[in-house]
Length: 223
Image 1 (spheres, rainbow, N blue to C red):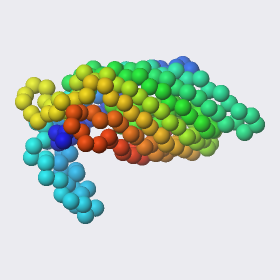
Image 2: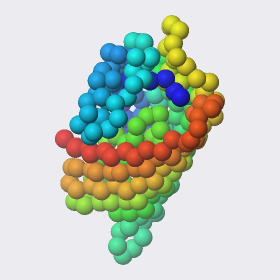
Image 3: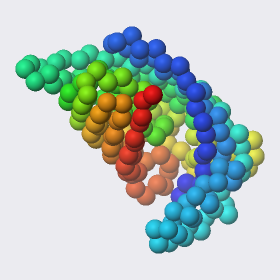
Image 4: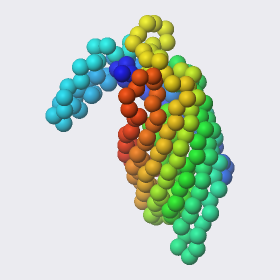
């Protein structure tokens, strides 16, 4: 299977919202390896949930400073229906990342149906999955939407498959082209947003027995 690895990071970015277009430039810096404390974190969660203890952390990737620069552009065209103010939009996107953690190019699109769609460009997700919007500006007290989308990525480098950049480590042979689907629901109430997303990814490396599927629950507070 893929190497055991942890990724502890922080990000800072700039966003330009032109109403029908969003540009997002983000710099992410963090640590891969034992310094991420992923082993202790997973063992703690497994202990309090009475789950089997993971046994592969002695073979995890070595410590490595990770730096990643990401750029995304999204376009949005909203169509509103009367008399209820419901809306529908489709948001295509292009983007890419450069760095020793991820280097890839991506293209995708997300369709949404709901109320107060201009408040954001979609829910945030765990990268490098389908891009979402980390910020939101609600126009109504209450908003909601259903969404579904897809993304394709051309992958040049993924440290979690290729292994450490500057030393020998565990690794697997990655697939150069991968795809993903997502679907979910999001609610906003004043300055709080709650979203659930189910993500389905194609196999990322040779010999992977099953496709990946996971859920993401995000709570965002605007201040």
